Amino acid sequence: MKNWRFVLGFIVLLAFDTFGQVGFKMVAERTHPVLPEPAYLVRLVHEPWVIAVIVAYIGAFIVYMSLMKSAPIGPLFAASHLELVTVAIVGVAVFGESLGPMQIVGCLAILGGIALLARDQTDDERS
Image (cartoon, rainbow, N blue to C red):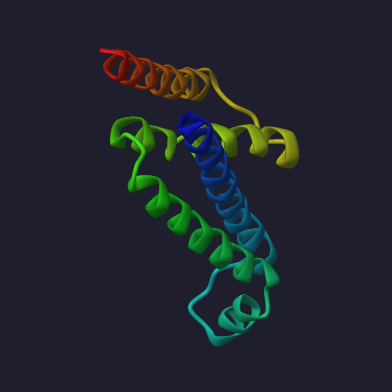
């Protein structure tokens, strides 16, 4: 039962982190160009995605702190960076961006590292 709580927590953390990063992209697209002038700040304050990003990061912080109470720190830290992979996937699927070979290798390395840490943690718990 405890492992399912961790898995659910990781999924919620990943959702908040991914949504926050995608929200940053939306803010950037809607408030551009970034210029050191009051007009930019007005555009930024009136952009609803700014609130969504703030809510996403508050949610991610709360979930991360909750998971830190009982989740193993190695897999937790690694899984908290899985957003790099999910944001890349959203970038391709939603924004029509493309991934180069090195980016794909990087995403696979992140996934492999998380799998190794999770496997190592599972082996430690069995011992």
